[in-house]
Amino acid sequence: MIKYIGSKRTLVPLIQDVARRLPVATACDLFSGTTRVGQGLRGIGLEVVSNDIASYSEVLGQAYIVADERVDRARIRRLLAELSRLPPAPGYFTRTFCEDARYFQPRNGARIDAIRPAIDALAVDPVERGLLLTSLMEAADRVDSTTGLQMAYLKSWARRAFNDLELREPVAVDGPSGSVERMEANALAPALDTDLVYIDPPYNQHRYLGNYHVWESLIRWDCPETYGIANKRIDCREPGSDYNSRRRAGAAFDGLLNALDVPWLLVSFNNEGYHDPDHVHERLADHGYVSSIEVDFKRYVGAQIGIHSPSGEKVGAVSHLRNKEVLFVVGPDRGIVERAFDGAGLTAASGRL
Image 1 (tube, rainbow, N blue to C red):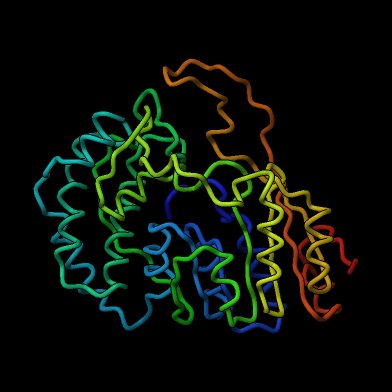
Image 2: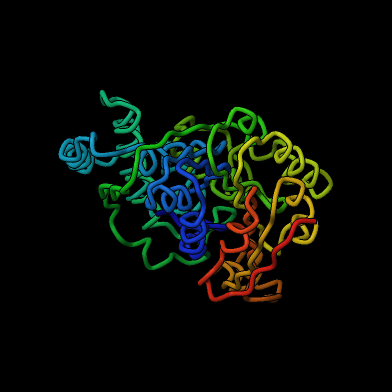
């Protein structure tokens, strides 16, 4: 999987344990990002709807949430081998992200410039296309020169950037085939007909479009105008969602909860964001019994190395090295809710306010 700030990789086992204790067969990962949570829920046998407004997330959803045993994996491997043999063809991607900026070595950028339009020329269905594009995105991620965010690139090349771009077949995920949506969460919410919804909304002013603009441009292949040292897409300048506004985030979350008509919710919030856990608990209690658990984890690597200017000069100190994630479970059965975190080895707080 691609490097991703806010990834729930370390939280997925806990989410799986909780979901196993709930009487659910279907789930929606409403802000899916890299689809890690959706994959985890699929892996325990749930049919998953994966939703996000990002084009790169839609592609990952096709590869990891929809793709199943009906996919001709031998054909995917043959196509990847053919794409790997294409000669380099430097173009927009090389110029924008390897020469004007330094996210990738130019030789790898030239291979991306050759492979990406070739995928569009293939006669493939949406799942096959998702698998091929996911392979290319993950290959690029393995040779990038960032700390995991595309708001900047490293002053000196990362060691992995000298490796050759290598297309690999995305790993098959066990479990029932799901579906993918690309909609604003609050717009999709009223139409959901699942037993469980997992909610992990944006938690600060930084839009994921700006954090991962290279992946968005790679998948859309629309060659947008860019700006700044990071060469972000010009549409990164457009206003973010209400979730990216301290003033509007609470109302956006309330509106989402009001629009959902599902029995079970799993909700996670980072303590660095706009939402106070006590307020979240109080708001969730309007929808059922609530239990919560706090998980301590290490901050992403970019936050650990401090704040630097575009020239590479260190201009700020590290404020803290660890964060807390609060996971809430909400449902109509008090006993099930109170037992949701049994065996987690952590202290849960339960109640209905």
